[in-house]
Image 1: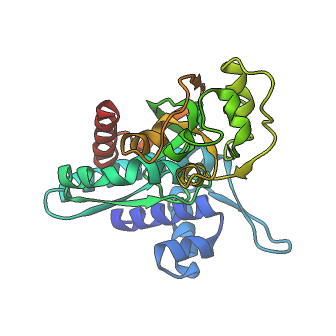
Image 2: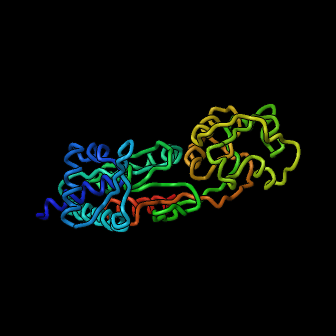
Length: 304
């Protein structure tokens, strides 16, 4: 088999291995399922190795053989290195699009207003930003780089620490005046508490109850009442509108505080072991796009 055919066959095998489906691989590669099947069978004949177990009972199902499973990661890494080399060759003359997955609130409140600085510094790169909020599969969904909030440990991903938040109440400046004005944490009993439930499953994400205990308030404020929202940016926007007090996070409220849309009525802050991390596949460590985005992001973090 000639080298170009080998490369096409390896591409076909890698796509089928990810999807475990000829049809899905064919859709990705823009060829017919029959063509994909022919390439895979040709590769098996050439190597003298079976790559898939094919079920003949009921619906046709594919599973990887042990030989295929052991080689797949190296093959995918090879394709990543090849793509990176092509990027470097093309970068000086053409635009390169790469995909970044970002939590919606972080994109809205921290990243998007800074992106123009990345574009000025790297005019040949175009970002495609995914803010869907679900935990993506970097390989299956062809994600180049991501920003995640957590403990820094995600299987098969390399993580680089970016930012850690402090948590403290924030509200509209209007709530500092008039009846029920916020002067001490006990004054929170006069206002709606805005609860961010987006990380309620983590077990360590600060809540109104934990912040009040940290501030030395054990009685007098009912932390079960108020408005519950499963979106951090929406919680902050509700506080800006004057409809309650939110438990703000440094990263997400810094700009609103600086521009006067929000104020901090109290000084007490609570920390959290969770943080923002830049993540990517190990095979993407030498990608020119990933390196450029990581270096720029760390510069932005340093600027604050």
